[in-house]
Length: 79
Image (cartoon, rainbow, N blue to C red; front, side, top):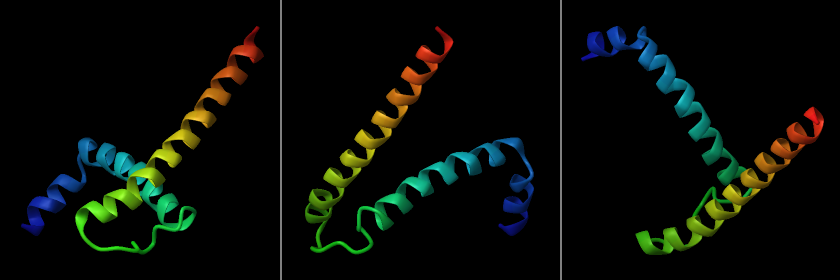
């Protein structure tokens, strides 16, 4: 098992997956630290979903605003 994993670790697909994983982990870190989701208040799947989904939506809205602002800056900078 370890030999198989070590063989895969040197491939370009593995390196690409690591970059993608890093981005996803950064998003979860932001949720945990800035949006205070380190611990969920209630247990059970639907209660966690009720707490997680609004926080994830707010995070996506923040990212969208930042993306659109960068896009506008590029458009106005090139004109």
